Length: 201
Image (tube, rainbow, N blue to C red; front, side, top):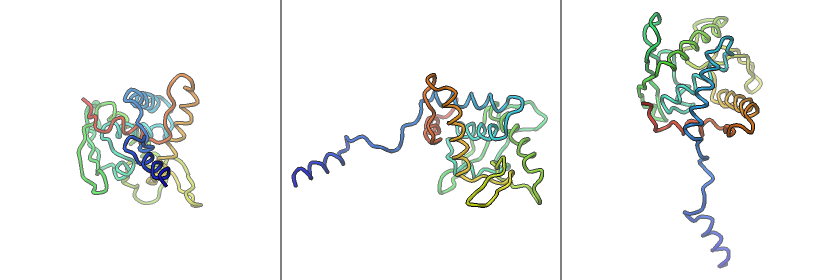
C-alpha cells in the first residue's frame, strides 16, 4: 500500500514534467515559416493552397488568432486601404475566443500584399459558384471530400481542412530540409504560440 501511495505521489507531483501543452517552436523558427510561405505565395504561378496558407500564417503572426478565430473572418473584416494605392498598412477585426471578443489588429505592408493576392485568387475560386459568393475569407481551393460528400472549391473551409493543409505543408517542408533545419510540428498551434503575446513592432 505504501509503495502504491508513493507511486501516486510521484506521478502527481508538481515537479513531474507535463505532457501538454506541447512546446512552441522558437520565434526564429516561426519567422522562417512566415518568410518561406510569404515568398512562395508571391512567386509567379503560386498554388492557391500556398497563398491561403501564407495568409493564415500572416494573420496568425499579426493577431495571435487560432483557427476558429480565423474561420470567423470575412472579407468585411479587412481594411486594406484603397485598391489603387501602393500597399501600405491595413487592419483586420478578429472575433477572438468563445466569447467572440472583437479586436482590431494592425497589418503590415507585407501582409496587405498577401491578402490582396489571396482576394484575387479567391475571386477566381468563386467564379463558377451559383448565387452570391460566400463572405468567409478562407475558402477551399480544390474539390474535397468530407464524410463522403464532395465539396467544390470556393466554399468556406472547415477547421479540419486547415489542419490537413498545414500537415501537407509540414510533410513537404520537413522532407526538403531534413537534417538542415529542425522539423516543423504537425500541429500549427505550436507555431502560433511562438507569436502569441508578442505584438510586432
